[in-house]
Length: 103
Image (cartoon, rainbow, N blue to C red; front, side, top):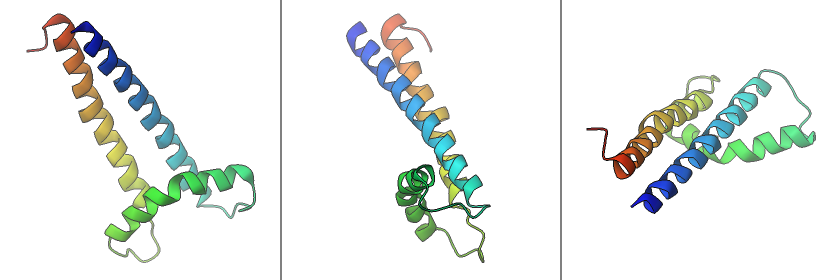
């Protein structure tokens, strides 16, 4: 059972790290939207390619707010939810599998 617990623990840490990195990418993209960056800059290009598929899906769901783009906020809230609910649940499951604790 400890092998499954260690595997789930590793998956939880990798998922948490990935979500944290993506959160910073979304924040950087939101900050860049306040200025007029060079679209041919490799960093700007990467940020747009990494975030636009997710932000576009959220924009399709959100109502039109008259030029105010709330999609980064919705994505950030989703990431926070995933980190607090899914990742913490995985860590709790690991503790129960390893030690039989956690009530």
